[in-house]
Image (cartoon, rainbow, N blue to C red):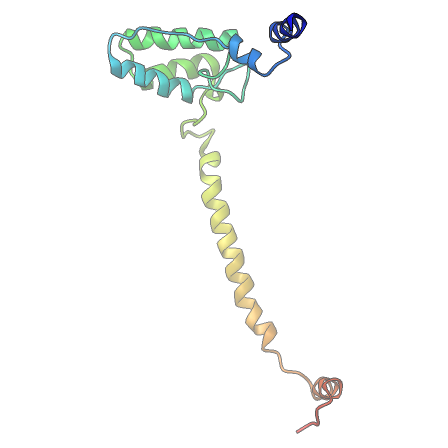
Length: 158
């Protein structure tokens, strides 16, 4: 019994069980002066991308840079900065990459317009495809082709 308990404890300590990452997760708590600041904090931390992790937002990342960005975000919210000011600061410091939804400017206009352009291009392609299709289907068969079809089907010609 003791050896089984020791094995279980050593597995948890060494990170061999799936429970170990949960126990090692970082939980930060901030005391906000107003409840709406906490809501804005959670929204902005979900929108800002961790510069190191690249596929995680700063709320989910345990990287040191993400932790620093959360502190900066908290401090700027408490100082009364607007969401646009905070995003502008983060973009100025880390580039447009730090945002999951980059703003529309001359560098990202193609990114934002591409889905609509591809949809229109597909619609035009389908239009041309279906406009040409009835013409090809409406072509008349020659008498030789009609005779061959009748022969294969075993039907007499009219």
